[in-house]
Image 1 (cartoon, rainbow, N blue to C red):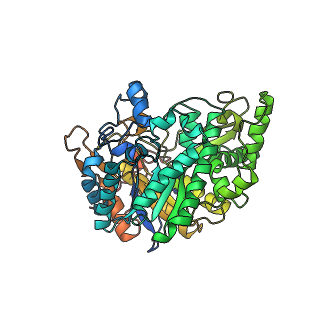
Image 2 (image 1 turned 60 degrees about the vertical axis):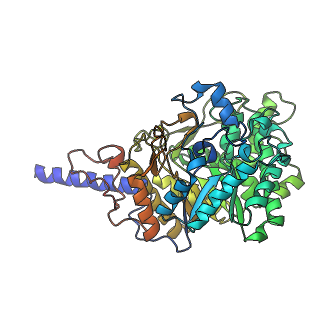
Amino acid sequence: METYKLLLFLAAVIIEGNAAMINLAGGPKSNYTFPKNFLFGVSTAAAQIEGAWNEDGKSESIWDHLIHTNPSFVKDGSNADVAADSYHLYKRDAEMVHELAVDIYRFSISWPRVLPTGLANYVNPLGIQYYKNLIDELIKYNITPMVTIYHWDLPQKLQDIGGWTNAHIVDYFTDYAKVLFDNFGDKVKYWVTFNEPMQTCLEGYGGTYRAPALNRHGVAEYLCTHNLLKAHASVYHLFDTNYRSLNGGKIGMSLDSNWAEPKTNTPSDREAAELYLRTHVGWYAHPVYSAEGNYPPELIKLVDEKSRLQNYTRSRLPKFTPEEVAFIKGTADFFGLNHYTTYLLSMADKEVGAIPSHENDVGIVRVQDPKWPSRSSSSWLKVVPFGFRRLLKWITKTYNNVPIIVTENGYADFSGIDDAARVSYYSHYLNALLHAIHEDHSNVHGYFAWSLMDNFEWDDGYVSRFGLYLVDFKSPNKTRTAKHSAKLYASVVTSRGLPPDYDPEDFTAFSGASLLMPTVLPLIPLYRLMV
């Protein structure tokens, strides 16, 4: 009888553990497939892969300047002077994209490579030719190019006069975009104005984690955002009026967002989670994608009140005129989403962050559940697929069924071809994506893996590797080799569905044992790679 009770108890634990894992995974194994017209792609960024930092007329970017003047900024003391040397190895890059069988390749153009002065008074012909060569190489393989106009590498010459806090940057950015449209608009159908503008403004101008690392929190992040949104809208209208007709092109922004899960089910924590979304991704999305435009009313109210209490003569959050609200609203054909992980949110019971700062203005606290799986080289990258599914549903509902393209999603490890954790991450997140599309009716049109290859990962240097292809950075030829995750991704792209042996309960790749299940039970085997 006691043995029978023990067996019942173990069975209950297994059931409870399985249910918890399915919940973490965002749903049971999906037998759905991706739509025939669904776009699969991979992404990179110029500053992270090109190298050739001062070749053929390229000028210094804010990242070049920051790293060269402060080498300790990067954890391993490295730099991006050579990186993956894609400036010279672009043909191999295009070949790799072809090997993955994806439809589209998202890469960025280096502003200081094309316009060394930062202004359009001189267009560098060698910079233009490099990108023409890359685009033609992609088209040779029937790969559609998607161009990110700005992925963090502002010319240092423009930063010297204020960068994104200088109101004239709107005109400078529009002039730069016009050069790109004039030279590449007939062959490039998809454009992204900005990649993760919140990182640029919040961490680059308000903080210290991104170039130019000004740390002018509470003011600079709001000035930066204000000018950046106006620059985005200006470029959208330029494209819409003069270039869209070239090939029926589309243009949008790529916004980064974690999912915000309430830490508990209390009304306060539920409010905190919603507030996080509205004052972070909504800070940039609401002016463009909402029906009413302008900054989120919650953010306006919070910053206005904090500014008053801190004795400022006016709000630290600049105001859009009614004409500017109308000019910015609706200036995107799709919602580009970069997503990696999830946080738990609660209201702060005391002052948080520096005073003043965006963090202090919003007044919420985010943490992660230590039981969430991860063996990532990036400590923040917990594996929480259900958060991906819920975020897609939230964006679809909040922003009027806007078409979504997931422009980045991926996993960082330390190195190696046998990247079982990355294989598992992609399997779980693609499963959650299928549930989001077919069950939640989230309006997702495409998915891009980050990244095509290992690259210079900003302040992490070469410690964190996100690539589907391993790069031997010590090799003179920067040899690229497909990892197991590249084979997994190619199989999903070609079959339009998950591999038959995918198991939504299997998180062993992140811990060595199935989480939430007794270690005395048989372990679910690691994902068996389709070769």
